[in-house]
Length: 141
Image (cartoon, rainbow, N blue to C red; front, side, top):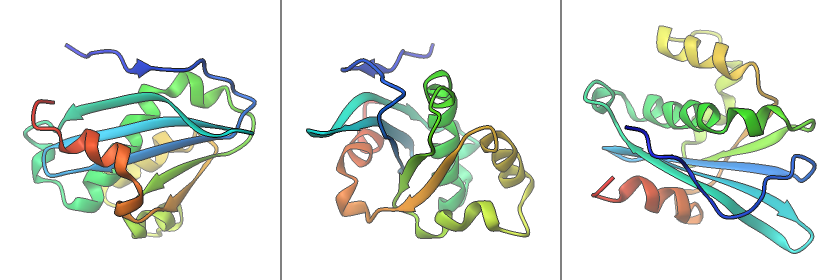
């Protein structure tokens, strides 16, 4: 059973949008935020356990899975945005993901799905991404 995301604020597609994701050894965490004149406002939080097969993924594939999962969870909101949004990840090589020339089948599937969205992947050191990190590390996911 999939639990709905926790929403704290109304989504406004005219405001700049940020998606932060993190993958740990056993779970994914994501935060959807809007940026207004008064600062950044987290509006939705979500997390899930990794499936048994996903536990065996390399870390870059787990982090990519976290991005794709967040895009799927908030698809309706993210597709309604006219300007590009930012996806923040603590895995630095993913900021070049869309320009990789050689992809595994899993990565190619992720790239194909992601092509519907207008976003850029930005590296954010893990120590700065505390919200998605905390969500992915909870032991009672």
